[in-house]
Amino acid sequence: ASYVLITLGGRPDQVRAGMTYVVISLIASTLFLVSLAFIYAATGTVNMGANNIWTTTNGSVGDVAGSSAEITVSGAGSRLNTGVNLYVGNEGSGSLTVAYQGVVQAGAVMVARSGSATGNVSITGAGSELTTDFLYIGGDRFGPASVATNGTVSVRGGGKLNAQTLFMGDAANSSGTLNVEGPGSALNTTLLIVGNNGAGTMLVSGGATVTNTTSSTYLGQAPGSSGSVWLT
Image (cartoon, rainbow, N blue to C red):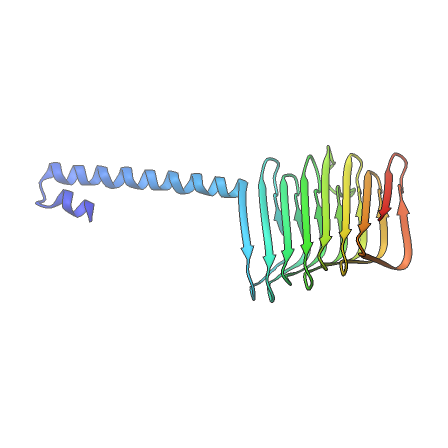
């Protein structure tokens, strides 16, 4: 509309002015969109409400060093399905919140995987649940090296964590902490390693339950690692 008003009358100087206006506007808009894309790539937020389902093969929250991102899966019928790997803090800072009967299911979940990554997972409230075959909290000995990774997973208010195999402090120079707190909160596993090659800590309190169907539990598995479990 502005271009039409400027060029109304059709004189050469009006057309030139109109073209200049259009070009400058296009350049400015493009620069704005590109800048916005870079900002969102570095800091992104996804909120999934009730009855929303997101299915993907792989997912990464806080993928590259210096980035920060978070995902919230909240409400009955809200579900995140990741067929292979879900990284919460791959090399950057990542956060995953599962609340109000939200559900997350993944082949493997890696919290604070490599470099100086930080990752936080919160599973809160009755009906909220995370299920995975493999859960790594702090480091991944099969992946890129850890410099000072720090991962934390908290299960509160009746939330449930089902992790068939669970590692805390999996890689050297990594730290992993698991908190299971309050009545109804539960961890179900078949293999529990608290401090595999790094440092692992597990705290169970306030009537929470931990069930290991094979009773295979290891603390401070490899030389130089450390593991501690607190029951209060």
